[in-house]
Length: 131
Image (tube, rainbow, N blue to C red):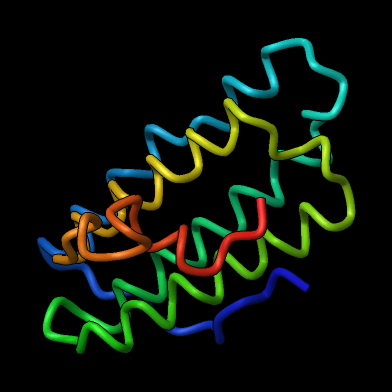
């Protein structure tokens, strides 16, 4: 379900490095440490996989990729989050929704997209999200 993108080699350039640096600030370990029972060692890796796949796909596309291609990568990731939320709607509540939207917006900026252009100014996740 979460093998979103084909395994391809991620380039090692400034654009890719900028995207990869976002991984260090994922909120998921904080969620796991919150003590809430839904953020188990089993659940949090799904979020990591989705966002790692998004970042890898954007890096593979490169900074010169079209806006359409970059948004398609966001769509895949957000739809995977939708599926995860369908399986357990306790995983994405208000605080987590804000974290996920903020994370998508940080990734969008690193990918050269202006988040304010999408989802009525809320960012690209808001175009497809059901959570």
